[in-house]
Length: 368
Figure (cartoon, rainbow, N blue to C red):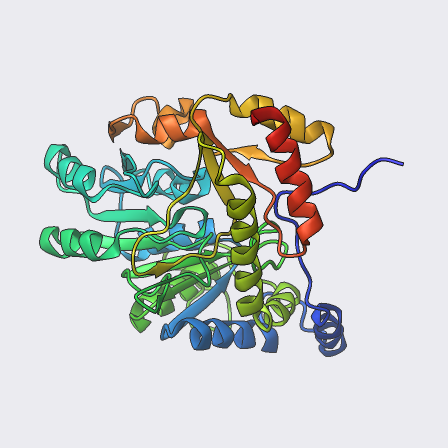
C-alpha cells in the first residue's frame, strides 16, 4: 500500500462547520446575506481590532473594490510587491490602471529602499501601494507607512496569507487605509473560497458594500446610477468561516510549531536558508519556505513527489510574468533569485510530527 499523500496546505475543519451550515439551511438564508455573514464580519472585527469589515467572494474582489473606492482610474499608477501571487495585483488591471512592481529585500517582502526609488522614477505620482505580507510574514511597516504618508499614497494591505500575524502586537491588515484577507481552500482559515475587506473608514466600506451588491440604489425597483459587481459572500460559506474563526488562534500556533520542527531538523544543512521573520513581528508561517544555495529546487520537488509529498516553487515575481512584460519595475534580482532557489514545504495545520519528519528525511537524502 502506498504512503498517504501529504498536501501543501489542505483545509482543516474545526468540527462545527456542518452544524452551522445546517442552521443556514434551516433558516433558508443561503443567498449572499444572512445572520452568518454578519457574524463572520463581527468575528473578524473582534479578532483583528479593525472597525469595519465586509465579507466578499474573494480577496481579489476586495482589492478591486478598494481600488475603485479609493478612486483609482484608467491611467493611474499603482505600486505593488512584485514577489507575490497574481491575485494581489490583477485588480490593478481591472481598473485599467498601470502597475509599478517593486522588488524584495532580505526579508523577502517589499523593499522600502526600492519603493522610494520606484516613486521617484514613476512617470507620474502613484496613487496607491499594494503590499503583500508574503507567506504570512509581515512587511517593514514602519518604513512603508512613513513613505506613504510623506508621499500622500494610499496603502492597501494584501493580508491574504497573514490573517493571525502581528507587528508590534497589532494585527496584520490593520495598518493600511484598506486591507483584505483570503479564505481560499489553502489558507489558514478557509471557507472554500471567499475574502474580507476591512478598513477604519466606515464610508469606504459602505461604498464598497454598495458596489459589491450591483450598485443598486435605495428603491424598491432596481435602479442603477453606476455599475457594480456581484461580490458578496454566501451565508453558507460565512457559516464555515464562523466555525473556522473559533480555532484560528490554535491554527496559527500549529503552523508555527510545524515551522520550528522543519527548522530543527533542517537548519544544520548549510545550504538551506528559511524565510526570516522581521524584528517585532509574529508571522503565521502559512507556508514554511526556504531556499537552497546549490541544489536545484526542482530536484527536491521531484524527490518529494516520488514519496507522495506535495511541494511548490516560490512565487514567480510579477515582473517576470508575460502578462506584465511591459510594466515598469524597480528590481535588483532578489525576488528572481528567491524564485529560482526557493521551495514551499507542506505546512497544513493537520500535519503531525511524523509527517514533518517524512518530508525532512526525503530532503536530507537529496542534500546530505
